[in-house]
Image (cartoon, rainbow, N blue to C red; front, side):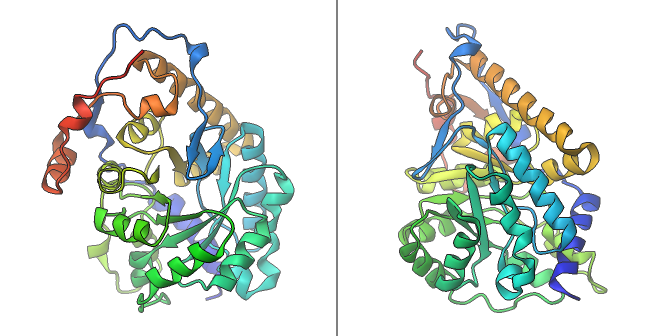
Length: 353
């Protein structure tokens, strides 16, 4: 099967397998504030990840590219949405374009459609320094995402089976690029052990991409004759992963992603420690069903609802929202407690306003 056809299969199976919504955010509850002392006009949604400034904590996370005309159309439309809504955009893995120059246009279109936007390039951890530079140059990208997808590769019939040397390759890329490197999972979560290793080699932005959203084990199992079902329930739920990483490397910028759909999910991810939040599968579903206008309306509504929540909490900035008191219950509480995170630090903090 060609790489382009595999890209289209991924899109189709992502839409049909859906998202399990087992992110752990249902275990997180905001502590109500009756005297927030704020107006909705006071709310500012700008944020920072590493050295990058974002006008919104929301961005369209990595989806596609390299699948011919259809992925060109999707990436063009998403780039136009990102421009209109003033949010960032990440493309899917560009390795297909590096190996087949004919596929480069399916990625390059995002910069043509959004000349001044915040755009993230994307490659896997198998990439060399030269390939990383090619990916960034292809998009005039503001950052490079390096995705970790061990489980997807293991389940993929034609996937990789050797993952040795990945940390060293990432370190060489971090030391060679003139744009920030974001290391992200692909739906199975980042542990505190992995986060510490990444920070030790100079990574300043980590996208946890936790369990609970698009499940690439299920997607790849749809393409197998003999399924590896045991990987379908594998991973760290998104809420737990954000808190683990924040606890382990508090000075590192965290992106929350993995099954995030609702504005409340976004607010909770930030309260757990994320500085920005990526949405991919849910945005793709809305776009495919309701078109550009539907996705634009959703993003505007999400911004409005996030402002209302922040007003109710007395949090005028994203940094304030990161300090809003929350209760952590259920399985997420048990996970974090056993992993050495003191959940009372979340419940007993105070916002000054």
